[in-house]
Image 1: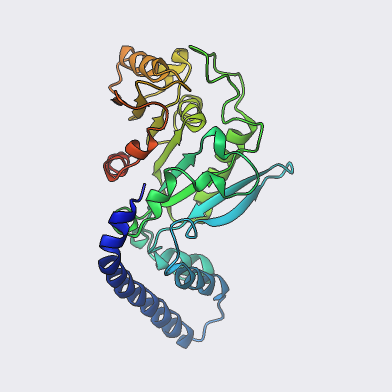
Image 2: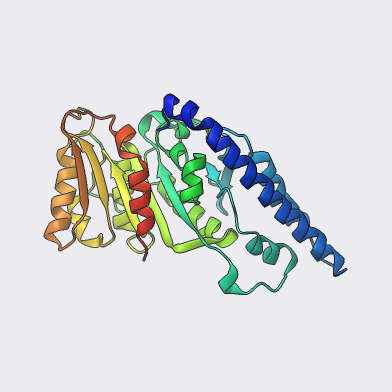
Length: 309
């Protein structure tokens, strides 16, 4: 989470760096378009100009405003509201190739990680805004995008629904036979986004807090080959599915948590260890449920992005 003191302390330096970076990026795009137009080939520049517009429009925005507000619709008429963050420096060669069928060598295209963020129960709804309240805007901070450029999908679970349809207050639960509708649509959305943008499919990560922590555990056991790493925060899973989880996991929980028992994370960690996996686990002895302010940090992002399939 961004601290006000840190923001105002670093605002001048970040603003100067952002200004220099911004104008360099815009100039590169303008020169590229002009030079390519000189070739007089019949090409479609609309998509390329759209990307340039997004880059210009994102300059000076807050972290929340950088997340584009979108809705995913599938062939069955089901929909899922989500927010979508693009890297501050999307690789122009990918968009050039897609927009104008230009021959760009595959090895010259920069691929970026994709982070999936599952919010908690209090952020459910249909406003497509509340899911950004906790944790996820860290990825949009200028200093983070400068060090860790990435795409981020933050879907919003509708009111009355859950990422995994279980009771969070129980000591344990059995994984439902089928994925929840919201998690199923999220998985469909991931497949759709990875086909449209320069995403490294070997570096797709998932994290979530509280209800989203349950969703994270459910997702990595239900779709064990989809993700490169996971960070469930104050959640819980079905220990009987732990043998399916072979990816790196860093879990977080507060010892004094009254909303979701700390044993839910402890038991999942133990179950993974019994199956020959060595997950990371951080427990905060003095904290209760609201541990995400500590968990979501530059250290976690660095750890996530160090993992790859």
